[in-house]
Length: 158
Image 1 (cartoon, rainbow, N blue to C red):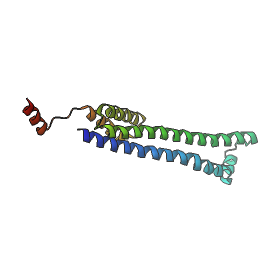
Image 2: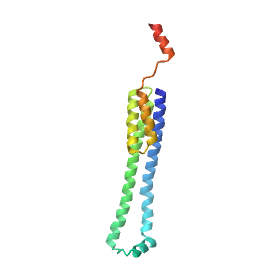
Image 3: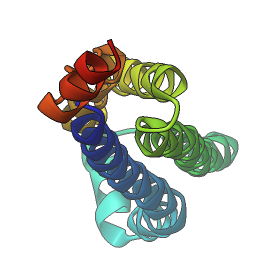
Image 4: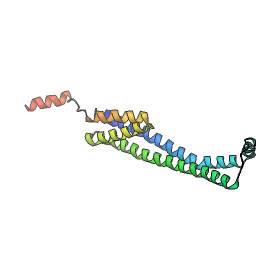
């Protein structure tokens, strides 16, 4: 059971870490590429024609606040997504460490995997990795049945 717990912890943590890296890359994409795309769109003739067609009055100060507000929002949201990804990466590493500790210190490894799996499930980002970590954490607490050789040694001593 401990080896299974170890494998589940490492695989679940690795899947969660992969999702965390994808989240970080998504945040970098939002903050690096969406702002220039929006800036080009808002400076385009199409946007100006859209404002004229809708008969929206375009005041300079409103345009300034509107454009800067959108740019600040995309940069801020990108930073928030990156921060969430970093936290999730730390939790995934905790799950991997828990999986690695499952054989030597089953209680500590099981706690690490359960905490990491619950965080992954609550955030709904790493659902599969979270499920694997929870199963591995539960299996770390289950006692192993003694093998036939261990039973014979105990009987021989008695």
